[in-house]
Image (tube, rainbow, N blue to C red; front, side, top):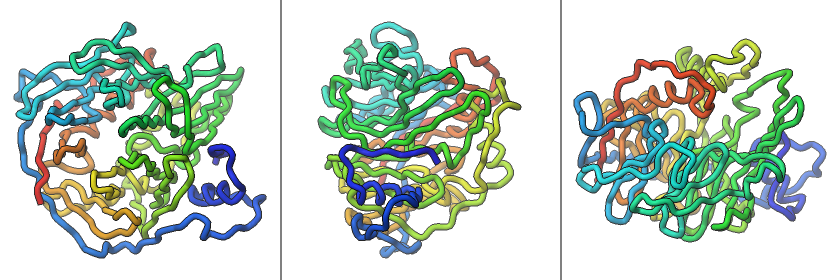
Length: 421
């Protein structure tokens, strides 16, 4: 595991508890009391049992028979206060906006290098100043457009000045009130290596970094290329969530059902765990995971050593709702579901107690079709999401030199639901 650093100035007690929370053992540190950072330990049985929530369809677009709406790969969903739904299309590199009845309104952003244009889109969010922010993966920056689609400037985290040493890459983002949190990496290159300092940190509106919640350093030797699922793991999209009160919830470990809760000032407040049995991969799942681990499908395949895990990642997604409840989608939550159930989520109260599981009933298969919860009482299902992302990212979509290849993928279909118990 790569070395880890934390917000300054940390105490020895704080550092040790953070490292223990991520499953990293530091034998050189003296023993300290585990009571320093409270750990909420739960059983595998929720106190209030299982609740089934039937999703009520409002509208749908896409699919094989929709000739009006062109969809590429929808990978992120937002909703505004008026109920308009924003779909981030990472293939078409734009945000498509639909009104509450599912009627197309406009598209925001487009592929390019000019004002309001993006080379590659990794995420989208509403910014504190009211603009829509398109997260460009590399070089990492936030391209801002107003609600009319006009360019509204950009934000470069850390300045993102190569002359200052390295580049920024962005992978995920969240904004609540005037608080902006980004996940990504600062990348520097040596003659024979590349160093990526992965981070989740808060930033001001001018791109100045404030609190750094989590960090890890990964050094890759070009002469001995090795990629490890566990060793190189760092939480990206779905691996952390920002609460309305400014707290940050992070699932920092790949092979452990563990969530860390950080105060807005970056101090680790508590950890939450529950008894959990990891999902052992099937041969098909293992092969697909290998393909997704490859940086480029057509390059250097024989030169890269992949260190794969026998199990799926324990926590696939986390989110916070307006009531302050923590929702966690475990690897088993999209597998072996009852007929008519898309996925089953674990729900924790504000104290970290595992009190309920919620099963969402709708069309689709949790392993193939993604279910997004943008807020406003809505849930949005993207049919064929897994295959579309596999085909798109598996060929090195973020690499401008990657060769295009045709993929036999069914057209995406987007279904917007209202949640009702």
